[in-house]
Length: 334
Image 1 (cartoon, rainbow, N blue to C red):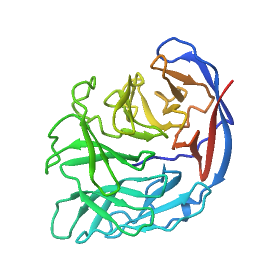
Image 2: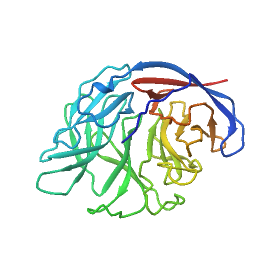
Image 3: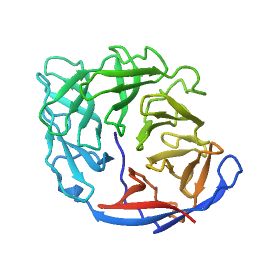
Image 4: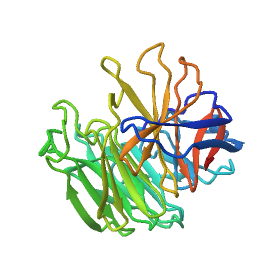
C-alpha cells in the first residue's frame, strides 16, 4: 500500500514524444496538460504514519496502525475531510492494514493482519464496508496472502496475491487473481502459471505489483513478473504485453529504473512513471501504445534529483500531488 507522494515540480505541459520506446513505430503527438489544482490538508490527520493513496475518486490513508482500532481517513477530490472509519476485529489487540481501496460509490476494502496478546500468530483478513458504513464484513483470507487490491467500475473487488502456508512459505510461485462481490463471495479465481516470463526466484510476481481500473476494464502490472495484463469486468483476459525493459520494483541493479506510479484513465490510456536509473539520468513517463504493444516515451525536463510519482487516474485525467497540492492532468491529442 505504501505509495510515497513526494514533493516535486510538474511542468504545466508535458509533451508525449512521437518515438516509440520499444517498437520504433510512430504515433500521434499527445500532450498532458494541467487542468486543475487543489490543496489537501494531509498533515491535519493525527496518528497518520503512512502516505495516502488515491482510490475511487478520494484520498485514503491509515491512522493508528498496529493498534486495536486503526482508522481509515478520507479526503474527497475537493479536499474535504470525510468521517473516519474505525476498524475493529473481535479479539485483536494489534491490527496492521497493508492495502486499502474505495469504490466509486463509497464502499471500502482493507487488507491486513491481526493478532491477539496471547499469540505471535497473525491472521490475514479482508474487510468489506458498504457505502453507508452500516456494517463490517471480516473475511479470513489464509492461505491467500493479498498484495494489492482495487475496485472495478462495477463495484467488484479485485485482489492479487500469493498462496502461502502458516509459515509464510509459498505453496505456489504463481500469483493468483481473485474477484469478490460486496457480500464477500468469491466470483472467480485465476492462477497465472508459467506463462509469466522470467520470474525471479527471490521475489514473487505479486510483490509491489499494481492493480488499476478504468470504466470498462482492470489492469495488473507486475514489475517482477515482467508483464502487464488487462481484463474485462467479468475477468476475461483482454491484453497481455511485456513489461517496460530494464525496470523492477525498486530500480535496483545496474541501469534499472523503478516503477513509481501507474494510472489507467477512462480513455484507457495507461501511464507509467519511472524513477531515474542513475543519479544523472532523467526520470521518465511512458504510455502504452496499444497498436504496437510497446511503450511510448513522455518528454519532460524534471530535475534528475526529483522523482515523478503518479497517484492514479480520475476519469479521463491523471492525478499527482505536489506537496499538499493535488494536481490533475488531461491527455489531449495535437
